[in-house]
Image 1 (tube, one colour):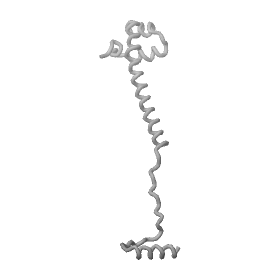
Image 2: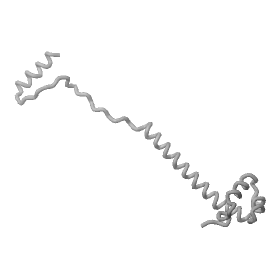
Image 3: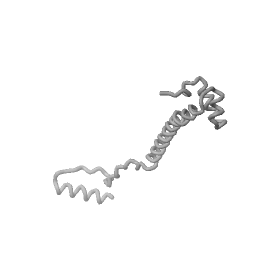
Image 4: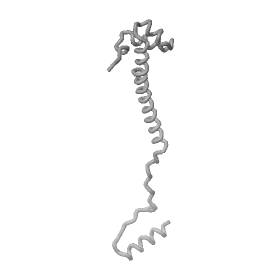
Length: 109
């Protein structure tokens, strides 16, 4: 739903002149509309558009801050612990042979 000023052919010119002169009566007199209609347009339509724009900018800023925080505080991926075994060990099922193999590895160090 739009107001009379929104549908006016010189809508943009009215807003620029209002921004420069800051007087409803001057702008309304120049374009043949009432000062009250121009005032309603400024307070309802223009402020609503400005609030929506500011909200979009605020959301973009929050997204940016969120991404920066994620980049700053995300822990690095965990590294797998290094194995303490330096040489390959062949496993057997016998306790005696296992003892011989581990003794042999300990002697070679």
